[in-house]
Image (cartoon, rainbow, N blue to C red):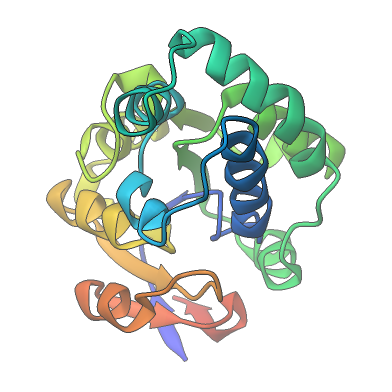
Length: 212
């Protein structure tokens, strides 16, 4: 068991609270197929931690897509929004949220609208004191800005926060913010061992956490 005594927790969303990466991969595949492009093997790693604006800009630059960024994002949202809202949260995450009394925030590269809808559907909106997106701070992970904003909204110093992340970019960003880091296993992470090595702790399930 891993014992945590941090008074505040900051959660990533995709891959950490929900197995969404297969949904995003399907979106990449179908979107690029419309432009006659196959998904390159390194795409997931290349866009890891990016917010929607950075990701759309990357697609325009790398794949020569001429649509403006806001049009690309709107097309992605039209496909992915309801898919994610209808997708189940990880069972162990739900159990953990049911038993913890810590102050909670979400720091994500996903859309605020999607996260808010997921929390309402799962009746968890009252559990989180803050939601911060990469768009809110204008920087994608591994920049620490998103975590520092979340800590500020929670009313805690960064050193008092534990961050749960499934990607290397997220772990690196949280460490740069001076926070305790917990790598959360997701089967879609192709470099799990590398991610785990970067973190203070690593878990396969939230059931492994004991609170002090």
